[in-house]
Length: 128
Image (cartoon, rainbow, N blue to C red; front, side):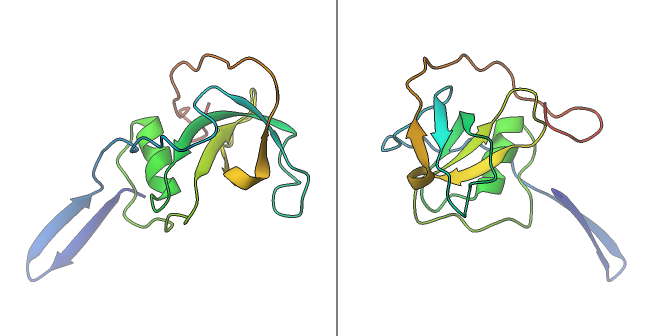
């Protein structure tokens, strides 16, 4: 949720989340469009075996803010605290849900990077 309304003292205040851009992450091993393999461990073993990187998230930056920036939406007012390590927002073709994963759980796939077009949210609220 990126909007809140405060009512009190005879006044109504509307608070809307800011918009922004995810800061660059020059130390990231993977960039947008890289196809990566996901390790088969307890933390991310249920993820698909291969995913595409949408954005690298620098340490300390909220993944919720990064996802909102990616979709061109206002940032949420309540959000997760950023990790101490580099993380990524990942995606799989035909899947409506993004995946969030740390760098240590990813490996190069050896495949050529793919071109990423526009990332949007569908009218029913799912991402496409």
